Structure formats: C-alpha cells, structure tokens
Picture 1 (cartoon, helix red, strand yellow):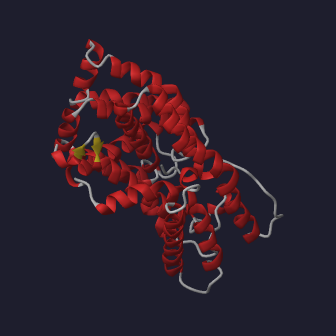
Picture 2 (spheres, one colour):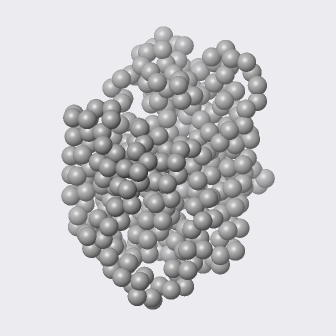
Picture 3 (tube, helix red, strand yellow):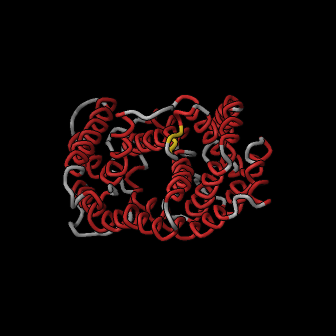
Length: 351
C-alpha cells in the first residue's frame, strides 16, 4: 500500500470512495424522477420517462448503498484509535443522531411539502426519516457493535483475532466473509434486492456490511494487497453476474446471485480505489466536509429542480441535466452557508 494512502490513521482512498458514493446517490435519485415507478416511492416524476437510464441504475443499485455501510464500518475503526468508548459514542451521537433527528423533523418535511404541492395534495406537516433512514441504521449499528469493536481492539493479540486477520488476507477468507451475505439474501429473500430503506433486508445487510468493513480494515495491509492482485477478477465477476442478471433473469434473479454480485462490485471498488485514489488534496478535504450536508439536503433541491424543470417543453435529456445542475448548485451553495454558520454546523454533522 502506498504510504500516501494512509496518514495519521486515515485512509484517503476510503474518504474518496465516500465522496464518490454520495455523488452517485444524488445522480441515482435524480434518475428515479425519470422512471415511471418513481412517484410510487415518493419522487416527483417527469411526464416523459427516460427508460435508458435504468441500465446504469440497475448496475449501481445492487452495491451503492451496501458500499456506504462498508465504508461507515471502516470509519469507526479509524475513529476509535484515538477515542475511548464514551468519547466515540458522544461524537457519533453529535455527528449522526443529532443530524438524523433534525433532518427527520425539519429537512424531510420540507421536501415532502414540495412533493405534495406539486401533485396538488393537501398541504400538511409530515415528519419522516425519509432518505435519512441510513443515518438511523448507522447509529444503531454503532450502539450495537461498538462494545464488540472495543473488545476486539483490546484483544487484537488473541489467537482468534490473529487468525481472523490472517484469513482476510487470503482469497478463501473473502469467501468466508461472503457467506453471511448469501445467507441473509436467501433467508430474507428481498424482492427487489435493492429495496434497503426501512426494511429488514436493509437493516441486516447494513449490519453485516458495517461489521465486515471494520474487519477488512482491522486485517491490515495484507488485505489491501490481496484484493489489489484480484481486482480484475472481482470486476469481471461483478460484470458477468450483472449481464447474467439482466439478460437471463429479468426482474427476479435469485437473491444469492445478487448478494455475490453486490459483494464482487464492492471488492472491485475497494481494490481499484486503494490503488488509484491516493493522498490528501484540497479537493478531497472540501468534498469530504461537504458530503454529509449535501446528502442531508439534496432531496429538497432535487424536488425543487424537478418542480421547475418537468413542466418545461424540453427534451428529457436536457431535463435530466438541469435537475442534476440545480441539485448540485443548491446543495453546495447551502453548504457554503452552513460551514460559515456556527449554530448550523452540528445540525448537518459538521464539527
């Protein structure tokens, strides 16, 4: 591993992957507005769908949310290196629980109000976790797993932990780590697989990914060197299973194949990311800080952009471009205000 990828207990490739995952989330959510089923899950939708968008969406949706759970588990590993159990819980409560509660009662009701206004519904206040369900899950995982993580840290020299770390530096160890995800998929059998929000599938899958992400980082440099050597295998397996899924299984592929495909894509992302996303930069520092507020706010500007753009008599491709542009400008413009306003910073997860 390049020494520039890790400095002061921080992996810059993981920071980059978090930023990239949030950007993909925004673009994916914009794309839902161009699918005929978008309104059924609470999105403002264009009168003219863009069916071709479903091709990249179906490739992304099987791994983009699990990737964030993996990354979140990795983040806890680094955070606990310089914090006691109590300090970590206090920090996570401020940076996850507070924005979650604030967003649930303030941010989500705003975009729900925009949605109801656009469709001529009764105007009323509704609080809801909405897209912030992810933060609620993460905080629960921290509550449930932090005692286990500190126990592991305290006993890193024990035979069990040494053998666990060794296993995760070998390809067969990756297969063992995959098995719980396959069991979860078969046991819960989610239809469709990509429905994560406020479902048992999303909760259990996220729990497994959060714990596994922690273990991946715990296993050290050997894990990263091993997956780098196998990066083309992971990419080929993910792509092969994707093509199999869309060409032979259609809407209802076997859940265990989807679990394997998701895992393959995530390992490919980690392996290529660890090779090519190296070192700190001003761009990374800015985007890492912006990612959290942008994630919290993006649905407001997505809905505002959709409300303004969709009635226009322009091509569906230009509609997509304008909604993406409005969403990003609105989010980053708001971030510039938030990061300069002391009392707003903690409400959006900033120190």
